[in-house]
Length: 254
Image (cartoon, rainbow, N blue to C red):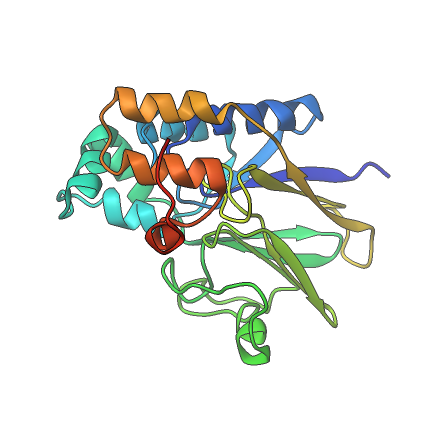
């Protein structure tokens, strides 16, 4: 029995250098199906190019909170958001806003639900080690995901912190981040493997992959384009530490 393999990527955040390396790694494994879990844009300097590459290489993409934020028809407030909004252009912004909020797959008899942040919406954040009530909520249908059965596997992005947790028959997976990892500076993505024709039990697997890339090359692009918040971006890419902690930790760009 030949199993289907699907690569799941998320939170590219305009980091084209990392995105190209991750997509090349996926292709080198013979995987042709790629799904993006949102936040293609924002924070990094090349949201337009990452959007174009997503449209070319991903069979489906779900909408992230940064899509809602910076792809809005009107430019958002703030120097950074306005810069990312303008860099995209109107046609790309329309495409990003039109993306679905969730997507269901069936693999090895399991319903696999894909969202950006949670089944509530693109903004409701669920961190690692959720409490029992939050864990259970992640698998239930909501107005955001539409009518349908409970999921067996819920896969999401948003928190830039890759992990897997199993409770009983349910599996919660965070794929981490391609372009802005905050669990260390190395991008991550996930490979799902299963039988997409099985109605009952069949082999099913989840694999995490880390792919190093040229961080300094990506930092150089941000400075060349005079991107707002380039220093915070530089520190995040080098350290994998969220920018809200930089001052307390005394972190500065080199």
